[in-house]
Amino acid sequence: MQVYKGLDIVTNKITHAEKQGVRHYLLENILKTQCVPIIVGGSNSYIQKLVEDPVFMFKYKYDSCFIWIDVEQSVLNRRIDTRVDEMVNAGRVDEVRQIFMPDAEYTKGFRRSIGVPEMSSNLREEKNIDGDDESKKMILQASISSIKRNTRILICNPT
Image (cartoon, rainbow, N blue to C red; front, side, top):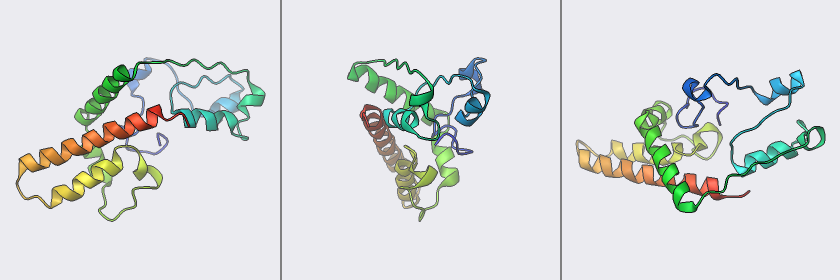
């Protein structure tokens, strides 16, 4: 999802400050230069597909070293909650609002990114509430809770 232009907050693209001078490349560029790729982050299913992909042939070209950080679930849940809250404060809602279309399909393409379907539900309901800021806040909080829950599911899913 991070390949799409826009949705920088929703797809959790690394910021310039987070890079701290470390260059980042698309895999195609690394393979062309014959450099050894170091892949950091991503879901388990992403890493598995990447390693097994016949185009990149990682398992045949490279000896692999996987470093796995195991964290207690309660610690991980707190980190997820904090990260989602940071993304909301950074403008996640407005970013989704820019691509929101009430009748769009939210199970395909970039619109299926975690946070977009949940926020689209919020935006649909929000239009039906005139001036009731308290109700709008409750709907938004429900969407944020759904984002946190779905993020936990993605992170904890081993495949």
